[in-house]
Amino acid sequence: MFIKDYISKDFPCFSLTDSIESARNTLDDFGYSHIFIKKSHHFYGAIAEDFLYEGEGTLKDLEHQIERFAILEDNNIMDSIRLFYTFNANVIPVINKNEKYLGYITCEDIFQNLSRYPLFSESGAILTVETPTRRYSMTEIANIVESNNSKFYGGFITLMSDEVIQVTIKISNENLSSIDATFDRYDYRIVQKYYSDEKSDLFNDRFGFFQKFIEI
Image 1 (cartoon, one colour):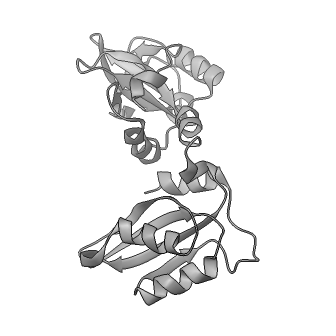
Image 2 (cartoon, rainbow, N blue to C red):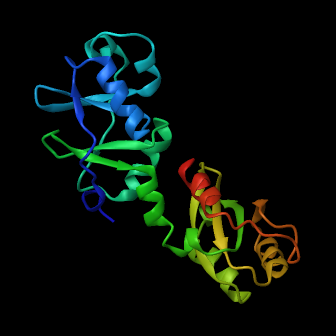
């Protein structure tokens, strides 16, 4: 799951002396959210597509719009998720420790990889539970689910403060009402759930759950 295993190399890194038109044409061909800029043979930053349609000239004229973000080739793909969300990007530049541009990864690449895992691929129910921070235990949460003969596919923390922690989990469809009751008995508060009872339609859109994961 390392970034270097997912690098594509067919998207160029522009120089400040290149024309805005050439960068815009390339972006139109690829459909990405940003172009990448290099300076003195080192990665310099990215410019969002919107700025490429505001005028002509060279990319030097847009230098003040450059955003500094990239990911190292040795990072885990999970490290890329916050970058996609923070910079509203569908493409992220990959660099080495010397800040040399190596290529890029796309949001689609990461989604396709993550979608192989049960947390995203399995249909099931999703709920967010809240517990005091001092009592937080992912093991206990999983045990509550599994003690009701349901499968625990995974979860992640969606809110953390000194007082409380909220955890969003993905579980299989079995015995949902019993799971609700057991969480209540163990003093967990169910903040959100994507089912109303065991006969209702369950939330099973993988991309929807992935989007929720990205937003953390």
